[in-house]
Length: 224
Picture 1 (cartoon, helix red, strand yellow):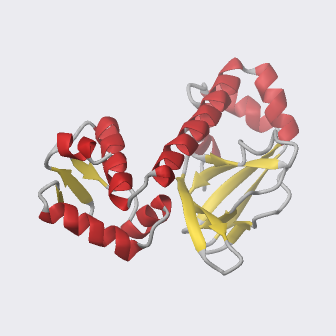
Picture 2 (spheres, rainbow, N blue to C red):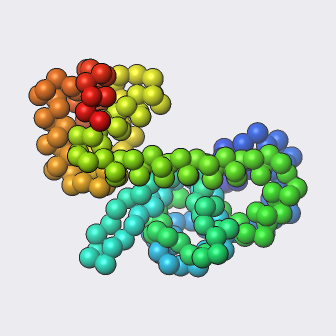
């Protein structure tokens, strides 16, 4: 049997919540839980958005679709993440992107009205929501800096320097594959691979399947 209380205790909206507070939320709120299978569409771009989604298990992909049929992965979310929180308080309440199940997953949907009620009733909930919104703003700024890079090398160097600051190590563990990384940079995967190989031959980095090892931090900075 799925333990919904445990799943919520791991959700970012309920950080530092006591067990009885989660119980009170489940009793007082009007929520729905839905199960999805791999590749099943959870929401289409342009669909009405009146609820936020709390990912209780599994993974989902947030993708931007273009008229040509091309898709770009914006982000992948795991259990504990939420989606829709940045849009639900907007005057234009529609999904800006398509949300698709990567594997079997369970999602809890909570109405906007109850989110507002929880913000008034529980300061921790309000602070957690504000922190999530702040993280989304920082993430957007982070990605815009990638896209504003004049060359693929600049994008790579910026990414590696950002990850070095975050991971505090020279062997940078890649949390996404190269195809998803290329999409984040706004370039093709072959172009990204060519530039990475050039940088490897020049001695700036070494490559393994899931890591990029920084050989010379100062040279990376000079390439910005």
